[in-house]
Length: 91
Image 1 (cartoon, rainbow, N blue to C red):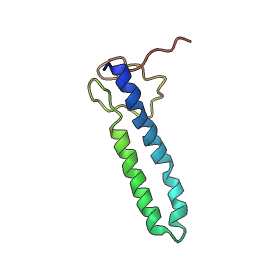
Image 2: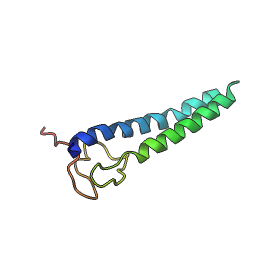
Image 3: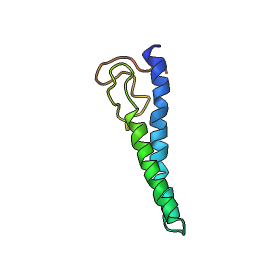
Image 4: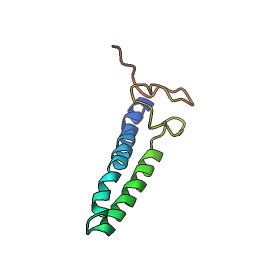
């Protein structure tokens, strides 16, 4: 399988990392209610999921972790090994 096809699968890890991190503030509503234990448990689960998915966001060629803060449209080549990760958009 080529790196472009593998990177399409790896991009999902970035999405799930951001989703889990953005859901953490929602757990504060549970912590401030009578479900404190569930809120703390859910918060820890979301933190670990965010870190796990962030660590899985790697270059398929050299396994270098990619920066999740970089826009996907700007990430055409791996910053370390320069392998092409995505097709260039011809606008």
